[in-house]
Length: 415
Image 1 (cartoon, rainbow, N blue to C red):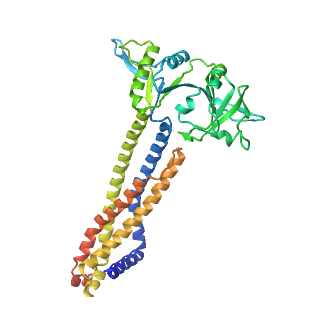
Image 2 (cartoon, rainbow, N blue to C red; image 1 turned 90 degrees about the vertical axis):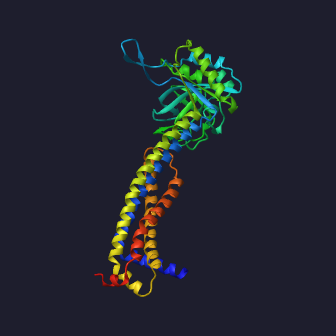
């Protein structure tokens, strides 16, 4: 049996070599469907990995209180839609929330983005005006899931005494502070001198915006240097006991309503965003994209299977005389069927392999171009291998069965 199988494989490979152009075209037809499936799923996986890693850094037991996005609501009897923008969260409101929100096992952090276009100087060098300056307190790093690779975090003493110290992003080690130990170096922001006390762990980019080109400074120092009107603050709360998260969110929501002096019938004019809710929403969106990718891939693969079956039927017709000779020499129906089945299986798997390689390369190219964190979708690769096997089985069964049923005498007469 083993010798017969080996012989059939040898004959199948020989047939593939003698019809090389047709084989290549068939492989490409199958590869197109697999490429579409693997390529789309690769991009979707990269998107999901990027967004999840960014939001998951907050921690599953963290929530933020910030300004809502623009909302459209209906007012008055005229039936007109009036655009309503929630008010910013001012410093007095943020400070009042932090002072009055004393829920057990929580730490509240205040922060605000002072500018996205700062120029930072070190000795005779300076950066492009593309550095983000963020005013923070001593709890910001922990609540935001940030870590330092060098130096230390801010202390309560630094924040309370408005110390001119800073923590810089990891890109400073590659640029302005390259080839030097950044710790204790003095950098200049808007003429103010800051001592570097820490370097953040690399975070990468989100939609083209680098998370590593930023400088964190004490919040009161930031408020004195950057006095733009209508500065918007964000409160981040970490709950150290997961079981208390829901109650902590409800308590924070009530506290913020009191700070905003909202009466019971008024809706919230601020936003409460839980990190786990964001991750779940991202998962739902990417699941829809994955399902769409599967639908597109399956439709394409279905077309590929029809093409493969037609090509194998043509092959059976062209090799009718060869089949007749083999049957006249004593080949069994099962042997003939197995030969054509093996041939279809080999072509299908080659098409799947080419499709997987092209799909991953295309997915990698797109992910790199739009700054996503590339990951190989192993589930898609495994699914592609299984799919091509099923396609080969389905597409090869009928041609193989047709070849095995040919009458040897009629086959020998075939011209």
